[in-house]
Structures are given as C-alpha cells and as structure tokens.
Length: 160
Image (cartoon, rainbow, N blue to C red; front, side):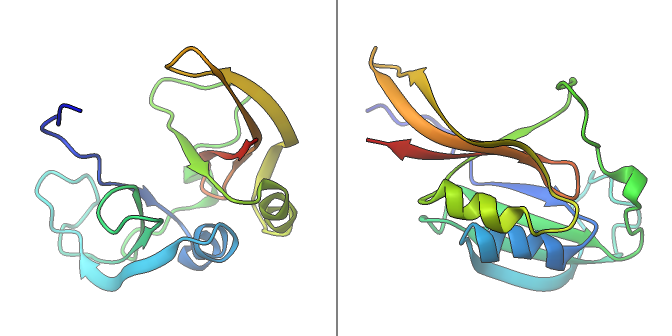
C-alpha cells in the first residue's frame, strides 16, 4: 500500500464542561487519557481569545497512541454558555462535523448515554447495511447523538 504524506492524528473539541465530556468519551466509550494538563492556548492563529489564557487539554486515545486521538479543550478565560453549543438542528449545515466512532457494545453505550445530562439521543440502536469499498456489504448496529456541546456523534458496532 502506498503511503501518503499525511497522518490524521487528532481532532480537538472545545467543550464547556470537561467532566461531562470525560464521562461520555472516557467513562462510557472507554477511551483512555493520554495527556491531561493545564496549558495556555499559544498556537499562533488559533481563534481562542487571549493566546496566553489557561485551558485544560485532555487527549484521549483509543487503540493507537499516535492516530485516532480525541482532544477535549476547556477554555478558562471565556467559558462557553449554553447558547454557544451548535445546537440540535434537524439537518446538517455547512461547517458541521460528524464524529464516527467504532465501539464494542453500542447497546450498553446507549443505555449509559441516556443518563448523561445534555445528551440528545437521535436514534435507538439500529442495524444498517452499508456498501464497502470492495463491493461487499457490511452490517453495523449504530446510534447517533448530540453531546452536550452540540457535537454530532455516530457510534457503530460491526455485526457479523
């Protein structure tokens, strides 16, 4: 397989409440903390207010310590209000992001997510068939939800 010049390493979500985000992504979905520090947001060009303002950055890993990581960042100088979340709209808009996650037990995750304040479940666990790049069909059980910050999450489990 030909190697391309780019690895997609991580996406970072700006969150209003780190502990609630960790309840979802670490405690329920099972990601592991790789990095958890108070730091400044000193990346040139980042639209985060004061670049020396403190923030908490938690980087979670799944099965690889280099790619497929999820960053969670809570800014301490300009906390997000409830109105800042992108909101639960009936359809996608330009600029929206869909996070697709593979999980070992969608039904258990679904039951736990129903207990988290601010999570909006879009559908109950449901099996869907999708075409594969090789011309076959894969079956996945999936749920979709908005997390408390308005991020749309699609969780799938392969079905044999």
